[in-house]
Length: 190
Ligand SMILES: Nc1ncnc2c1ncn2[C@@H]1O[C@H](COP(=O)(O)OP(=O)(O)OP(=O)(O)O)[C@@H](O)[C@H]1O
Image 1: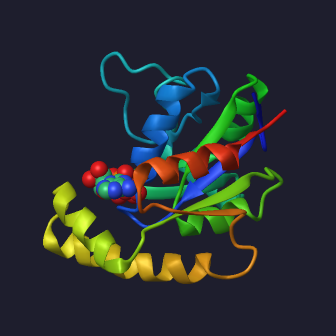
Image 2 (image 1 turned 60 degrees about the horizontal axis):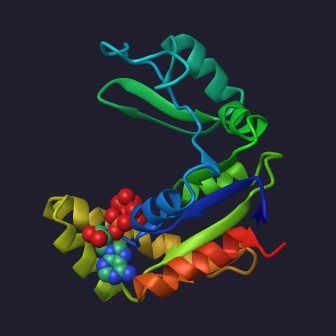
């Protein structure tokens, strides 16, 4: 089956259901999608393979490449840098797979400055109340992290409401319908 693009960007507030929808998609279409390999400055753990699990790089090199605009997103966690390079996305496409990028609003804005030309999909919660309920019942964050995610989600929703920000907006109310909308946005009937 044909896809509408070679690269898809999926974004949406934390708890809107991106992982849930993507898990189902990758399960139903196991051979279609590829994943970009992230960079990190942390040391490899036993068994981790350079270029497969991560691109393991030196901090100075990664900092330079980030400053040169070679990364879509990068962040530091406990002293180690992590990020997704533009090239790692192009490498997926070169293998013939469709690249799916699950990134936040900053990442979306950064991709828009590249020549990657993806399709942008936004996963929207039915309401802030339901988003809060889902985040709480997922039980993976403490109260302050939940509050931070809810605050960030207001900005994400505002950005998504701007004309042309996303190609498709999928409201994740009923999961089956949302999933069908995602499949329709990705695959073209050829
Ligand atoms: N349509 C739905 N109806 C009810 N619950 C849902 C629905 N979609 C997702 N959920 C539940 O909501 C919670 C948040 O979903 P999920 O973890 O997929 O969000 P996410 O967007 O990937 O979040 P994050 O960005 O934090 O990784 C999960 O517990 C999931 O099971």
